[in-house]
Structures are given as structure tokens and as C-alpha cells.
Picture 1 (cartoon, rainbow, N blue to C red):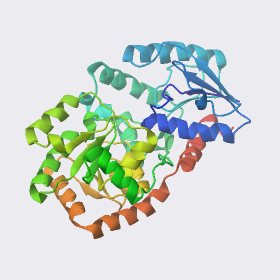
Picture 2 (picture 1 turned 90 degrees about the vertical axis):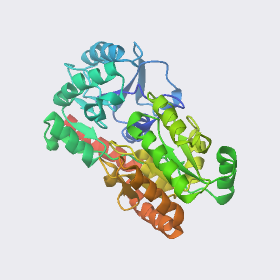
Picture 3 (picture 1 turned 90 degrees about the horizontal axis):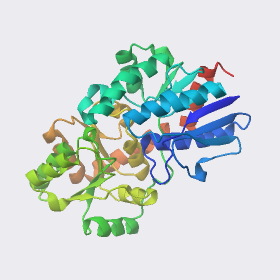
Length: 376
């Protein structure tokens, strides 16, 4: 049997949410099923570390798909032609894009549909492309995998898809996230915040991460507590960064907000584990990987009470309205002021994180794949 996989987001030293999902699941599935042949499709040169086992054949096909016009050319022409030539038993697409009309069964992993609810969060042409084609992908897919019960219901409701066709495949936790010792915490604080304690927000600085509201709440927190805590924003820049800098200037916390940019894996884990708490208040998430990373790092969590976040956080977080700056501020004050609250949230996080692992993710994705192929 042959399974073709879209692996265009396996990028050396640049793995993000969907890239990590692809890496961790495919590494396990390919090695656990040596009887199958996997074809990995890359849109540019790839790193050999992504060829996980002898039953994987990598193929590079162009053009590099990093723009809506190129998405169309890659998936609807290059990939489709290859699928029609190979006639695989399954085309697996971890980023949700499919090749419409291809002569094979197709399984997308549709992580969320934020672009439907918040079209202004992406560039105009990208949003237009997503909202035109993802409903078509969902309709044509034999099955759909997604990363939370929230996303399952969201997709089913908005795309008129039966929930029986959608499988929930939770994300896992990367092993480099762990509790950080006191000595390393002190070193991290000296390096990034001149020795001061800090809140942290992890992830790309995307508009949906709601960073301006977090900064406004942090400014109110600083004024109320008269503390010298910092706010660390750990993630790569994204479209909409001007709004973040404008907010920082308006509320007067320029010296207290630290941008780290993209960090290497081990460094990110050390910075996260050295924070007083994770402050993660997007107004939309399909899963929210920083939540489970914070649980593994042993730090308290403040997060939004909307979309998938209560489902993933369980009782291991203070839940806040992401649009209510005073509510966010109050949660920050509570976590800052109470060691007992911090300890309680950490202990609850130790229990909640047991629901999530990449082994479970890979098993659930494999189950979805076998359903799609007809229990091969």
C-alpha cells in the first residue's frame, strides 16, 4: 500500500504548530508501519532528518507553495498530477489543503477555521483563497481530522459536514518542555529581563493572539501592583505587528515588554519554564499548544474562556474574557499575589497534561487514516 503525504511544512529549525504536528505524527506512523510505503511531497529542498525510515520516499515538486496563487498551482496541478499518476491508497494533508478531483482518497487535518470567523486576521488574498477552497476541501474529503472537539463542531456547523465524518486528534507535548531548575531560571531572567520576573506569551505575533489587549491589561497590572515584572513575547513576527508597537507606546510599558523573536527549541523551553505564568488570551484557537507546553513546564496559566481553550486547559488555568482588559488584569494580579494559587494551578496542570502526548496523537491520526482507507 502507498500513502502520499503533503510535508511542505517540515522546515528545518522552523517548525511551528502544524509543522510539529506533521513531524511528531509522521515520525511515529512511518516507523510503526514498515509494511507501508510513504511518499513525502516537499515544495523545496528538505532536510534528511525528516526522512524517518526506509519506507519513506521524498519527492520535491514545484513551485514553492507560500502564496495563494502558488497554493493553487502546487495543490491543483503539481500534486494532483502526481496523485493521478501514483494512484495512492491515501493522500494525507496535515495542513488541510487537498487536490480537488484527484483520483484517490484524501484525508485533511483541518486545524481550525479562524479565517472564516476573523477574515481580517490574514492578508486579503489569503483569506479569499481559504474561504473559497476550504469548504470545497471539506466537502471532497473522505474524512476530516481536527485537533479539538471545539474545532470538530465548528467545522461541522459551518461547512454542513456530519460529525460522524470528523475525527478529533489532539496535539501532543514536545519532550523538551519541562520544569526548569532555579539556577537556570535566574540565568534566563538575567539574560532577558535584567533579573526581573515575567509573564510570558508564546506563539507567533498573529492578530488573533490578541496581544494588544494583553499589553493593555499588563499596563493596568503594573499600575495597580507597582511591580517591576516584565511581559515577554516569545515568538516570530507576523502581520499586524504595528498594532502591538502602537499599543506599547500608548500605554507606556515600552521598557517592560520584551520581544525575543523565534527561539531555538531548548531556549524557548527554558524561557517558558522560567516565567511566573503563561498569559495566553487569543480570541480564537483550534487547540492552543502553548497551554500544554506550560503544563509540562510547571507554570500557572491564564487563558481565554473561548473556543478550544477551556477544553484544553481544563481546571489548570484561570479563564478570562479575552475582550475584557480588566478581567485579564485581575487574573494577572491574582496569580502574582498568591503562591497558593500558582501551586494549585501547576498541580492541576500536571494532571491535565496526561491527556496529551504525541504517541496518542499519532495513534488517533492512524485510526483516522485506517477509517479513510477502509481498515486496510
